[in-house]
Image (cartoon, rainbow, N blue to C red; front, side, top):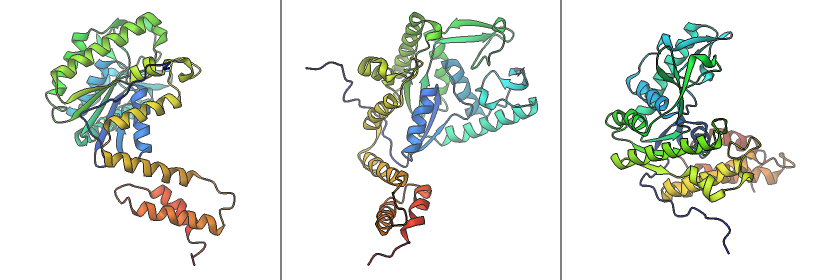
Length: 325
């Protein structure tokens, strides 16, 4: 008897190995997946302008990276004692306007480098609900808790989402593999009904873009959480964000769908080395632990393509305490 509908045999055209450079942009779920990739010691980076939720802001960030567009001072505003950008996450807030502009411009240049070098770009949409700055009539990435009267909340259309990405696919994304995902994070502040509508619009927009551009494809992270796991125990206490266990399950599905056979083998060996480095022995000065460390130093030598500098330092600290007879 089966009591859940498990999503099986996900196959993507994109294949990732330990020479692949990956750039991720979008919601906090994209950041979660980037952290998993970095833990697996892949060459992965997340957008330097921070978490972005709506597709228009994501497209605008990619465009600014591609063109190295300097920060627009008209999009910088004072919030409390900090200067914030309506196009960036609050992580780039600074004490003065000049410092904020410098931080954003540095992030844009770094984004240009990362996007230019990437072979695979992962784009995660969070919500189709967006806030338009009334004064400039432009959609913002972040309201930064500024007065609500300054913004108009509106629902993005499928057409304008697709239209914002078409120029990117014909330019900076033309020769890159693009993996779209739909964030499983529930935007319950919009109400469950509006969240459902929002996710539906995003999913259709992704389908249309994938139909238009053969280098684009979809990984079903949203469906894995909502249809496969389908249980509140896979959400954190806020009933909005997936738990670490859910993210790990998605990661297993993602790596199985995208990793080359060699990369899967290397990833498995990396996980064992990382676990060994995190192990805390009862007696770190023992000969037994020295032998343990020597074993994993030898394993590290068999993976020259992977940076194990942190783990290597841990093992070397104890490996030479005893010389094997």
